Image (cartoon, rainbow, N blue to C red; front, side, top):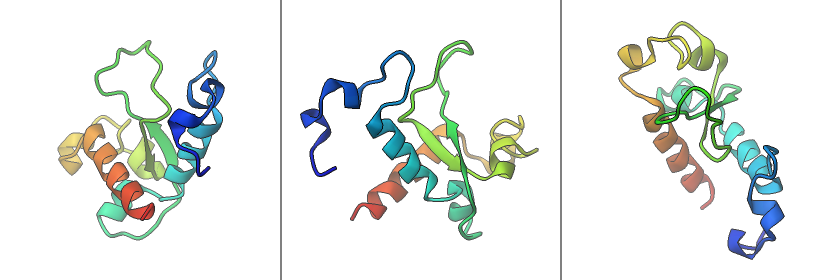
Length: 112
């Protein structure tokens, strides 16, 4: 994967008929390997994570982009104070875009 994305064939960089591409799958795997980004931010240590697709600004019937994913543990993803729990912002004073920013920052640090 030393080649830059613009050098890769179209089939490896863009979604084809709703299926994740090789690059998207690799990105999602790397993001998931961070562990829960909120636990990390709160200095609770590394916890296993599932990926949450950021849906900010999208309608309910629109499919989320595979590049905009955030690693979250089960509690922070689907728990009472999780992003799907309805009280995430009130509890944590963060939204999906804040979590995405933390994820991008961690990925940038990890790549150096």
